[in-house]
Length: 333
Figure 1 (cartoon, rainbow, N blue to C red):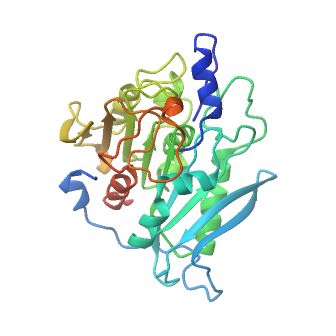
Figure 2: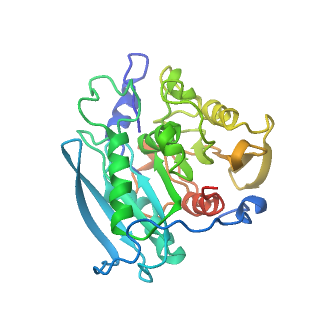
């Protein structure tokens, strides 16, 4: 997550933000799930004869003069001649790739659905993603260019594996959600990333929340988001430097040319949802609010921080399953 440590934020919240780690599906819109899939577009990794290890493997690549680390999960039925979707998921501030891998459960879905899941790792102490120009006080951007890193990472993955270029997706928790938002704002990525998922996303205010500093809208990127009303790390109502969840979601729907009034989705326990439809270029936006929810990943089964640090986690929905359903229904046109 992105943490702006200003004097107006209490010391308790500041401590929580520094130490926090990255950390029942109800009906999703039938029209979304029933969307037609495009003709597959193969990456350079299709048809290679070199053996590919299935399961979990660890890798590094050099980007911007820095050695970067990432974890790959390849399903057991992977066929190098058949293009598969690619899902990248990002940890929060202070986390690491293996924690997000365990916490989110993406590998389990990847095995069942036959796609490749990738867990990249941020840099610095605490580890983080450099999502915005402003970044965090006392932790300058330096020479780390995470936007370029994701360009390099996706190119590397496409060269090594048989990837369907129309089905490349990114998602993340907190600071990782903010990085997902940043990539969706980027004009080059908007035509490379099919859709984005954000959980407890740390999205900056001002120019950041509207993407004005970043690029014009070339393609409306479909987006699904989740946020708890009692999030102690990235408050639902926002802070001077973090946009309120409802505000930045509404801004994204407006950016995508969606109908002004969203449709209510069926409630599940403490979780309610809205869907912005009628968007330009199938750029649908879905937002789930978790009543009394904390800075957590709904439905997560992996290692978790205690509730007094991050708040309550709901099992009324499973964010990973809902994000995948949304992704599967939103390939590149």
